[in-house]
Length: 108
Length: 120
Image (tube, rainbow over all chains, first blue to last red):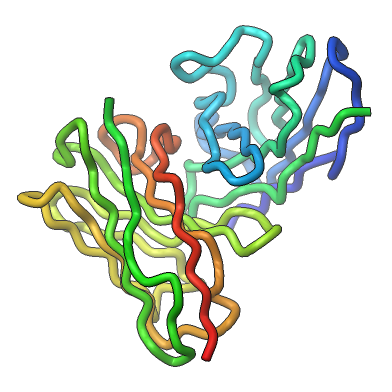
């Protein structure tokens, strides 16, 4: 099973700042089958990025994804108040599909 | 637009079987893969398994011996059964759609989730 490790565990930033979230895989993720989700308290996860770098429908362009192989990054260019949440990466290239443990982006 | 809704008991006795149903509305269940995912309180996400509209399944090895996922295309529903539950199975259970035909796809539509507590 591919283990995904996200860092940092918590990111304390102010609105308007840039957020950089990391996801490292224990083995290479085939053909960039890597997604990012945002989850707010009491809500289901929402798909942000798939295929490592493609934005899902309706996702603002301040969200971007990059990376390949074992190292992936989610960047939020300028944090809006609604972006403070928990973010999960997920690989769907090798079964069982697995998620990282999450990065919480909190208001500083 | 397609929406998913989980339903089922919120409380299950230890050693019993957890049973949940996901109803797909606003679109057809056909041609897509459908997954169950769970999240223990305050913790991360765990994929349980998926099914396609032919009834072919794939389960997480960590739960495989206890999981059955079924599909009812005429009702636009699929279901989850998890047997021999313990308090460790207490979680929010989500159903989700794979974003386009195929198993290796991100989950683009999620249900709101249903909390299931395992306790006597």
